[in-house]
Structure formats: structure tokens, C-alpha cells
Image 1 (cartoon, helix red, strand yellow):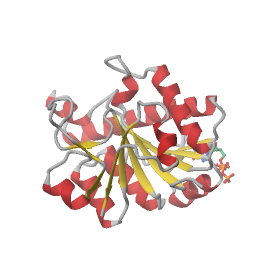
Image 2 (cartoon, protein in one colour):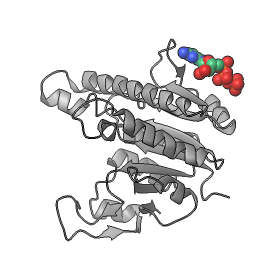
Image 3 (tube, protein in one colour):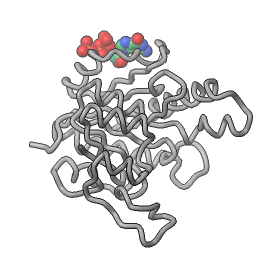
Image 4 (cartoon, protein in one colour):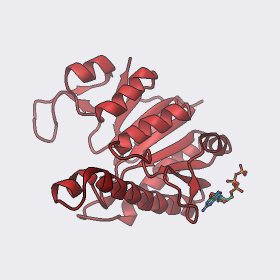
Length: 237
Ligand code: GTP
């Protein structure tokens, strides 16, 4: 038995760049695919939401005057579909069965998001990737991850980051920062911790969906989490 039966894995688009400044590093993609396979092989149902920041960041698009906020957000949503397709390819290359569903209809390349179909795919052992965020501007891919996780009744959101959990301050900037093993939603608000945006956190809190923040770049971490080992930080009620 694994600790979680159905998970929603949130991957950052930016981490797909690896050591590059832009685009997709095939080695990172392959590493992530292997991590996913290790838990699918245990029978865990896996859904994935991936960001698009390695290709286009809506906020920066606005700052550079490229587009207004809504337009820039739609461009970012399309970027997530590119990443989702790359990830789908990497997962299928190592023998996993997958389905890609998009919040914005692109019927030539993927299925539209249909909640009941997504759940059925998961039950059949397929990895389901959700592309195009929520399909709406003014929402982040973290919010998309929370929304989809609640919709498919995932047991947890696994938020893959570059650090191994939630810290009292940014560990990359402040050497005195300490790591939390467990933290409540209320503390996340009161301490102003920057785990996900507040829309995403609130959706999780209101639906009693725990968030596990962990280092996705450390091979074996995802498997450890499924086996119930203490990895990362658990955010719960
Ligand atoms: P089951 O009926 O549960 O077996 O699911 P299924 O996904 O195998 O059935 P379906 O016949 O719906 O899909 C077969 C293939 O077509 C899968 O690879 C789907 O991802 C793909 N597919 C389904 N709907 C669409 C769509 O609207 N657009 C695109 N591009 N592919 C689709």
C-alpha cells in the first residue's frame, strides 16, 4: 500500500530548463519521467499540471510591454501545452500510458478537459496531464493544479520545487532560514509564506486538500513520498 492513491503533481516549467536559460532540457524531462514511472509502477494514480515559465511568463510579458495581462496569460497557457506535450512524449517513451487534456480546446493535439474522462483515465492507470492552466487569465498554474486536484479528488498536491520544503525565509537568500516539516494553512497565511499564490492555497484549504512541497530534482524523492517517508513539508489544516 502506498501513502497516497491518487496524486496531483505540480511541476515547474522553469525547472525544465535545467542549466539553460530557455526551453526544455531533455535530460530533466527524462529524469522527471523516470520519477513518475517509479510511482506509477506502484499503482499510484498520477495527474500532472506543468507550468510554462521556461517558454513564456505572463507577468514578464506584461512588464516588457509585450501584451496586456489577459493576452499575456493566454500566451503562458499555450506555453504550458508545449511543456505538457514534451512531458507526454517523455512518459510514453519509457512505456507509460498517458492522456493530455487541455483547458483550451486544441482537438488536433489533445483531448479537451473533461473531468469524468480524466478520472476514468486515472482509474485505468494512465498518467493524465492537464494543459493550458485553468483556461482563464488571472489564474496561475498553481491555481490550475489546486483546481484539478480538487476536481479529481486527489489525496494530495505534490508541489515540486528546487528546495526541499517550506522554510521560515528564502533559504537561497537567508542562511538562518529553518525548514518546517509540517505547517498549517493558517500559519502559511500568518507568516506570509510564499508556497503557492493565495488563490491556490485558499482552494486547497477550503477543500481540505493537503499540499506537500518537496524537491523534485532529487531522484527518488517522489517514490519516498509514496512510501510514507518524511520528505519535504506537509501543509494541512
Ligand atoms: P477509453 O475509452 O477509456 O479507453 O479512453 P481512450 O482515451 O482510449 O478512448 P478514446 O477513443 O476517447 O481516445 C483514443 C485516443 O484518442 C487517445 O489517445 C486520446 O487521447 C485521443 N483523443 C480522444 N479525444 C481526443 C480529442 O478530442 N483530440 C485529440 N487530439 N485526441 C483525442
